[in-house]
Length: 190
Ligand code: 3PG
Image 1 (cartoon, rainbow, N blue to C red):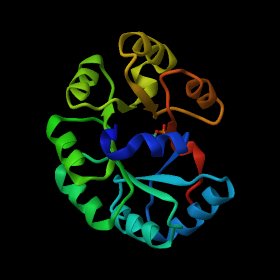
Image 2: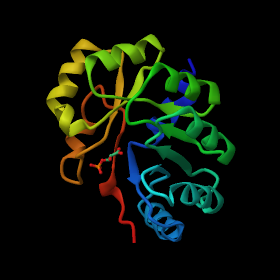
Image 3: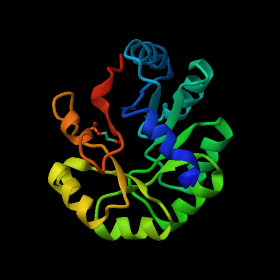
């Protein structure tokens, strides 16, 4: 099944997703160089700064065609439309609502809705979403929460982000209900 417009293939191919916040599009090229040197083939650019959209556009222009350019921090349908017009490869939201999931599904772009609680997971399941971002993973309970969710929601695969580091992410990645992990530790924005 092509769930969430094909997000599974992107998460399977990219077990570590750099979450990057740009304050200028001039920073994009050096980040792409770092990621290429580290054999990382994707990026999630957050919508937390004024420069974000320009950085996304620039990244789509200069990244190799196989490189997956994602947009994070999505909170509304208007942003989904903008992702569509820029041809982004995947979309990530920190939380989720039924209408946001509907807009992401309709866009045809692969997407990963965010959840933190059991109620949010059930709402996402009602929308046929089985691949979810657990955010903020550290506040949700980290490994303890993921192990509990594995027994309560065995049908869900998570991409946890928030508070993961070079030191602790391997242990999270090894959990059976974790398909990939994300975070800002994966590259330096200069
Ligand atoms: C995200 O948006 O996924 C997180 O902010 C990443 O969290 P981190 O900065 O703790 O890695």
